[in-house]
Structures are given as structure tokens and as C-alpha cells.
Image 1 (tube, rainbow over the protein chains, first blue to last red):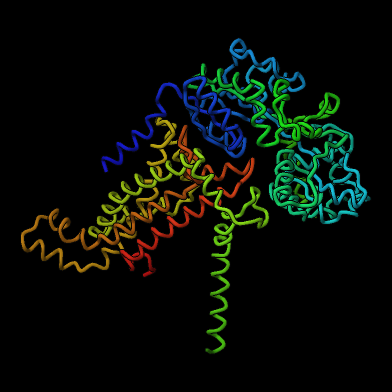
Image 2 (image 1 turned 90 degrees about the vertical axis):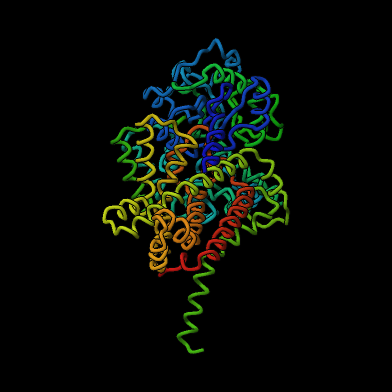
Length: 351
Length: 257
């Protein structure tokens, strides 16, 4: 018994040891080889913990959890986290590789001047489709019309899924109608609701995750989903030696961008290592490593030369400057707006 | 076989299929040669190979084992003491205090423990997880031990006392050996509860203390690979083995009375 306790103590000791960086991140969201080479360079150890949702990270911090150095929230959470006093300002002098980032993804409303956050990787909410089926049916996938226009939908009835997320579905409908994803005009929302209700009878389901498998097995032909997931679905389809491929389509009207960013905790035990880590991850080669595994979008210009050609060629995930302009990040809503959206969503789900 | 008993058989078979078919599928797909695991592609052992090279997964499994062993050892000692006290002294308040953590919704216990640790400035990590697991395991051990004590012949302890044993000697030499199967069954139960607890662990985990259930849960963002099936299979085997051992050691303790 006493031996057990001392064993436990020994096991928890490294947490107090000097040269450790504590990374609190999404699972599988950093390339193992990048971590290894950072450990070799800094002669320290990277200890990783994981969360599955931004809300979990926020809940943990709100309760007063300490000890993390670097965290990777989605950008629209950065403002709130900074306001709550959980983040420390970055010392740009220690981040010479900051210059590698593309200006399009810098200086957002969530963190003006990138005082607290550095873009890490991103996903775009777009359309994924079965190329063979679309060719057979003669449908060109380049617009949200594939998800919302009954004229097109009748050809693919029951073969379409949309995300089970009120914010995302609403944003897509607003984009289809030509508004901003952050449009808060109740009249526009009503229009969006009607658009959704007209399209809903043709949809197979609202799906948060399951569509990856449905796409790769060929059960579902068109999805409203995250670019990373659609990449996984395509990988799955190729592994299963399907006759079709799953392709990304960035709707011409624009889409939602989710930019994950690295931040340093105010209570970070090792801000020096944290800066070193962030700078390291901004090196083109290390930044590219994640994209090569997950198919995530990459805000790093220097990374491009290291990204596998077959991934780099997916235009929807690596948009040109013109298309990138039509990407928008979701902003937080106030309480009243959220209530209204909840009500609309209930009506949509109930019908 | 009359009609009613046939109907009962059918109902029983349905119930067992419902309970075990998902588990069988999890095990079968741990041998599937597809990363996405959407449909059967071919047989492979590679996921087990990958698993044994996956440092994150192994670290999480090690954490879980360490927490499980420590928490079950400590809670067995306290749980046995509590079970004995409940049996011996017919207390009113103690059973309530012991059983409350079992009845309280886990999420409530998780949140309140988190707030408690932060308030006391105990840093979250392995130690806070172990303490929480001990807290909810004690009750389970106490129940098993008490039910074992209830089936014991009290005159044996009295005889020992008559023959001049001190209360402690009588407990050590007579009572404890008699209730040992219950104690061991309680310990195993505590171990299995600890090793697959998610909710309380989620709230009380801190830096560098990701356990297996936390690790598996957070893999959802990128992709759940068949490595999860592989580790689930191993975990299932471990849990099953422990339950078998427990039921062998103390057949009565795992059955309803």
C-alpha cells in the first residue's frame, strides 16, 4: 500500500520536473514527428493532454485548472478567453517565424493584431461529394444550391446530409442567400429558415460525424461537412478501393472558416518553452506535417512547399486569395440572438 | 417446452443479442484492415501492432492502470472498515454517507470535486483523480463487504473472544479470513469502476494525466481508428477476467440477495 502510494508519487513527479512543455490540444492534432524533433531541439519533454471540444477547454479553465502552457482553441473562442484573463500576450520578438503566416488569416476580429493567438491550422465547412454519382447525374457541385435548391435536390433525395449544428446550417443557408454568415437581421434569418425547410424533405439526416463513413461507403453522395472529415472520407474510400472518390467543393458564395490558433496560458509554468514551441510549429516543415496527416487547411505560406502535392491540389482547402476573401469565421451571438436561433432550430427540427 | 417458456427463451435471446452484439462487433472490427472502419476490408493484426507503438495510447493506459490499482487498494481498506462498521454498530448516518456517492449523479460529483480541489489549491492531476476515484469506490466495496458479513456466523467471532483473543486479534484471525472473498470481490469491482470512469475523471484530470477513456473520447475530432477497437478489446478482456475472478472468489457477493 505504502509502496503503491510512493509509486504514484514517483509517477506524478515528472509533472513537476523542470524541462517540460504542457500542451493542451485536440487529440491527434499535432504531428508526432514534429513533437519528436521539438523535444530533441529543446531538450525537453512535451506532455500532451486533450479536449474534444472548445467548450471543454473553456469549462476546464473556468474552473481554475492550471499547469497548461500552450492551448489550441478555435479563433472565435480566443476573444472570450483573453477577456477572462486566461491568456498572456505573446512576445513577438520570440516568434521570428510569425512572418511565415499568410496575412489573410491574421489580425481577425477575435484577436486584433494577434496579441494573444497565432493561427495553427484550419478547416472549412463546405460540400463533400461523390464524384462518380455527380458525374452520372450531371450535377456540378460549386454552390450551396446542391444543399438547398429543391430542383437539384430532387435528383439526390435521401442521399444528402447536413451538419447537426444550428450555427453551421444557418450560416450555410445565409451564404446561399447571399448574406454574411454573421448576419443578424431577423428577416434574413426567417428567409434562411424557409430555405432550410424547403430543402429538408430531401435531406437524409442531420449528422455530426457519421457522414464520414456514409460518404466512403457510398450510401450518401453529398454532405455539408468539415473539410478535414471529407479528406478522411476520401482516404477511406480509396482504402476500400471504391470506384468513386470523395471531393471537396468550396461553394462560390463562400463558406465558414474555423481557424484553430495557438495561445499561451496566463498561468503557464514555462512561457519560454511555450514561445519556443509556437515558433517551432510555425516553421514550414513542422506546420506542413499536420496537414499531411489530417488534410487540414494551412495558414502558413512557408508550409506549402512541404505539403504533399495531392493535398495541396485540393483547391477548396487551399483557396486562392480571391476565394479566401469569401471565407468567414463565425462570431459569438448575444443571448437574445441565441434564443431566437434556438427557436428557429427547434421549428426546423420539428417539421 | 410449453409456449410460455419458449416465449421467455426468445425474449432472453433478444436481450443477450442486444447486450452483446455491439461488443462482438467492436472486437471483430479491431481486426479490420481499414483506418476508417466503415466496412469490412480484410483481416489484419496491424492495429494491435500500431497500438503497442502508440505512446499516447500506452501512456493513457498506464495512467489508467496506475490510478485503478491505487484507488482500488486504498478504497478497499476504507471500504472494508466502513462495511464492518455498518454491520457491527448498526449506525444510522454512516450508511447514508457511504452510499451517497453511489447514488449521486456522477456529473454532480465530478463538478463538485473539481471545485473542491481548486478551492483547496490542490493541483489537478494524477493525485486528484486518485482521490476522487477512492471517494466513489469506497461505497461499492462497503456494500460488498457488508453483505458478506451479513452471511457470516457471528458465533465464530464470539468464540474467539471467549478464548481470549483481543477484538483486533479476533478480527484479524477470524473475521477477516472469513470475509476475504468479499473484500477481494470489492477490490476488483473498485478497480473496474475506476479504470473505465469517464465523467468524474474528466473533471478532475489535470496536466499529464490523460486516462484511457479520456484519450478515446477526444479522438473523435480527427478520426477514431481501429486502434480504439483494439484497446477496447484488451480492456474488455481485462474487465471480463476480473469479473470472472471476482465471481469465483465470492459467488454470493455478485449475486442479488
